[in-house]
Amino acid sequence: MLKQIEGSLGVAEAVALCRPEIICAYPISPQTHIVENLGAMVKKGTLEDCEFLNVESEFAAMSVAIGGSVAGGRAYTATASQGLLYMAEAVYNASGLGLPIVMTVASRAIGAPINIWNDHSDSMSQRDCGWIQLFAEDNQEAVDLHIQAFKIAEELSLPVMICMDGFVLTHAFERMDIPSQEQVDQFLPPYDPRQSLDPEQPVSIGAMVGPEAFTEVRYLAHAHHLQALGVIDRVAKEYEEIIGRKSGGLVDLYRAEDAEVMVVALGSVIGTIKDVIDEMREDGKKVGLLGIKSYRPFPAAEVFTALEGAKTAVVIDRSLQVGIGGVVTDDVIRSTRKLSDLDICCVISGLGGRAITKRSLHKAFDAALKGELPELTFLDLDKKVVQDQLKHEQEERHSGPMAEAIVKAVADLHKGDL
Figure 1: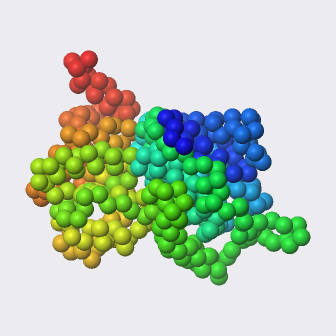
Figure 2: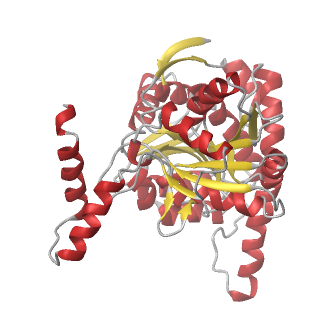
Figure 3: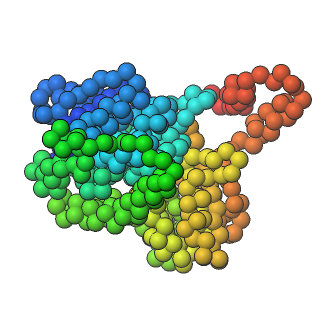
């Protein structure tokens, strides 16, 4: 059914269609509207046979999800930013125990300094936690990925994190096609957990593992993620057959057939990049796109194939490894190390919610076509503000708080623009 609704409500309706049995919630922007809407559905009785628990922290939210999943229930929660960091210990436990929990991460910057706007710092901080990570390009895909996530999680007995850009998607009103309950029931079978606590057949879940077996346990986690590559791709095809819409999968290519420059990106910026590519194609500039849908497990073979014929790959990274560079860029480099003629450039973009404009992308992609794009670029970085601050720190021992100084400098620089 077509609806013009907020992204968060669309996701809430998608989750409800999957018939979760336990939802645990702690509010943190920008995911709060999702669990608020789910709570309202439980209270009204439109979401039946589901226990909605308000907890005291994000750590408690994941702990309750773990308990509910171990007890044999289909579990869901959501979080963002510092909330994801606060539940990190339990996040690792969920994957280590092989529990098919589904969680939305409404991606948002991590402080300090405090910033509530969108980038990928939070989700990327947990890239090695053992969860499957799927990234949504738009709200329609966010709806579809949540429904697919329950099937992927339960088939593999692994938790799945759906990462959707905070505010950019969660608070945007768009037209979405919400599947019917009959369609979702046809696609997603009743929950049949691979492992659960049963008083009639007692087992230990989460027992101590010593050095003699820990490597093998961790290797199994690695093996399960390699298996997940095929499952994610197959589930997307099954979803298309029932729902009638292509969504999800491992990667998506756009105007890539003869591209000299391939842009690699994930999340909502893909829409802007497609517009830029269309404009550049009209001018005869051969630019294409590789959109990554499954970030963990990383689709290395598909990335290699997609970039094999290109001269340059431009990776749009919305998170930063301080002192090194882009997070996604490292995965692309690792996947294409046998492509000796491929230049890989990292463009750090949109940190803390800064707009990624078509004008700036045009400039970066044009530079890449000319072979002039540096290996590491910070899109729209105000170098003068940074250089002035570094100089001040060298000259003045008691230079004061860095973040406040930068905010003041930027404000003074643009005072005449107001």
